Image (cartoon, rainbow, N blue to C red; front, side, top):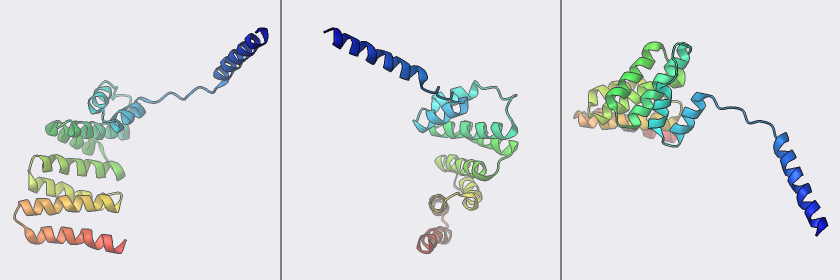
Length: 171
C-alpha cells in the first residue's frame, strides 16, 4: 500500500512538472479572434469585437481589412445597407489584391441579394479579373449570367456561361 501511494505521488509530481514546463501558448491577436469567430459563423460577435477596436492606432491596410471584414459580417447578418457602407469604406481607404476582390464580390453579392441586377453586374464585372481561383471566377461568372438573364440579356448570359465552360475545359 505504501508503494502504491508513492507511485501516485510521483505521478502527480511528474504531471505538475510537465504542465509547468510546457511552453506558453502565444496570445491570439484581436483580429485572430475575429477571424476565428467568423469561421465559426459567429458574425455578430465578430462584428461587435471589431466595432470596439480602436481605429486610430491601425494602419491604413488594417483599417481597410477591418472595414472589409465588417462588410462581410454585415452581409452574413442580412444587413445589406451596412455591408455596402463598410465595403465602400474599405475601397476608399485603399484596397488591393485579395481585399479588393473581397470588396468587389461582396458589393456584388449585396446588390444581387437586393435584386439590383445592373449594379450587381457592375461589381461582379470588377471582381472577375481579381478572383483568386478559377472556382471563384466561375462563381462570379454564374452570378453575371443570372444578372444578365434578369435584365433580359440572354446573349450576355450565354457568354458568361461559356466563359465558365471554357475555363473548365482548359484547366
